[in-house]
Length: 169
Image 1 (cartoon, one colour):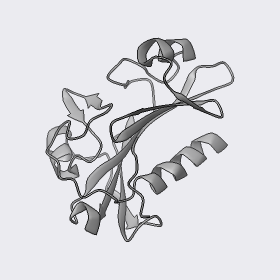
Image 2 (cartoon, helix red, strand yellow; image 1 turned 30 degrees about the horizontal axis):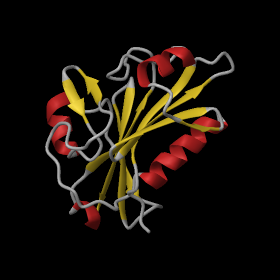
Image 3 (cartoon, helix red, strand yellow; image 1 turned 180 degrees about the vertical axis):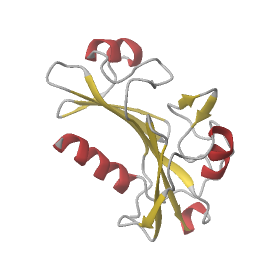
Image 4 (cartoon, helix red, strand yellow; image 1 turned 90 degrees about the vertical axis):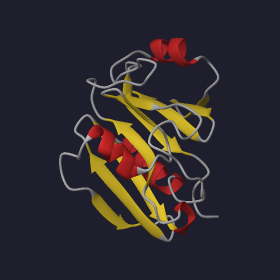
């Protein structure tokens, strides 16, 4: 539980607003992407475009002042996955996707990894070019990071995508 809370905190701190890059609906950034119902979602995609493509969340989004930058953080709950957003001057006051957490095994990464899969399956899918952060495997590609946490049986217990290098300096 502590690792999950620390990852969530790291996600919110890293998902700030240091990039003024504009984006379109899909695959606007390099790196790993999340696919759901035929829609590809990349870090820094415009949330309104994402919402147009995948529909409204299950509940009203939670929007709050950010503790990492001068702007707002958002959380959109879609049941099996959550989408986190950032909106501030550095994103031209446009709400952008800054992170995604997979919450159950009904969804998976584009490469086919879901909660409950083995550590070996993760390495088979993504290779051994990861940073081992106290047992969390962190893969970086382009301007985003994909991390996998494991339970005591070495099965995936948490999957998080998040934008890198975006926190205020």
